Length: 126
Image (cartoon, rainbow, N blue to C red; front, top):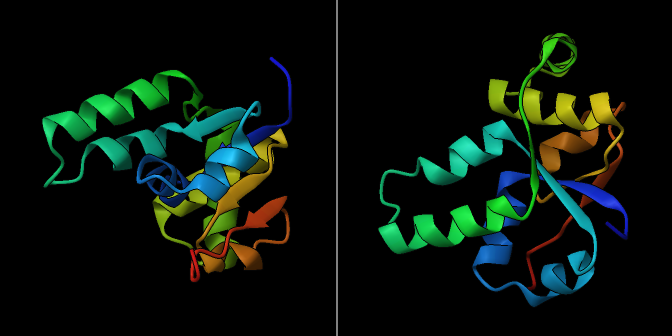
């Protein structure tokens, strides 16, 4: 596959699925990866419709989904202790760190995680 590889945070997948053309354009021809945590978050919203599930599932199938292994687990523990992130965010950050994949997110709390290669997306005027 051509292009760079990016780890997409859950909010970025939601922006793309809601039609954000800036992100679609930026990520066109790029390799996209998500944590299994994002997959769980995306597909477990209580009010998600069958149509939304089908669309998200189709989109997720185009990406690599990274499960939690021992390396990610150990980094997540260290990240959570050091930065006091929520557990899902710690696992997503650890996935990025463990595999050297830049994380794209709109979640500003990640900017404090020094070990991350971070692309902070500003969706305020989109």
